[in-house]
Image (spheres, rainbow, N blue to C red):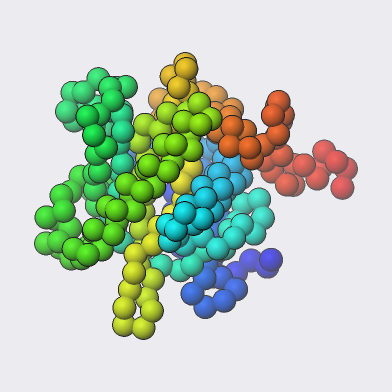
Length: 259
């Protein structure tokens, strides 16, 4: 597919004009950032792995009736998506204390929360994506009351499904981030799941060992980021078992094959 006009570039993805009105091409980069882009680096092949993992999860969610922006994967790094009006709220679903909630509330990391917790953060890097309440969201008109009900319902549904999906492959779903967008049908809009679901936005711990299989390995300078992402993909059945050097970059693969 020929390269189209760039619409937007974020920390982990680039959006290009799609082949049809109302569509975009989402390109997954290898760039890695943490702490609102204060820490930057590269995880080789991350974009390929995240593309595959996000495709897999979004497809499964679509199969159980969760509306998403995903249409189909185009190649190793790109997928075709529906164009949405992004709601400027990051929705974080927490099952286990980790990361910022441990720091804010002094809860030891790894403690199972009494109930699933949903938090909302205003999407603004310059402000550090501050934690906000539903009252803030209503006051400033970032989302309507009915939209927030839909968002909360979908977040819980996604959590229930993904907790089971990962538990079945020996992974504990600690927490994860979701983003939502509006699609318009005439004068009416509805909310659908957008962005991506991958080890970039999820905390995934091995159930037996507690080993981190997500971007915390980059955040905390633990190393082994590529291996962790590959392990998640392998357990999901997206990479052959025992393959040490997965094909993560098509150009490199072609060179090795002498093509």
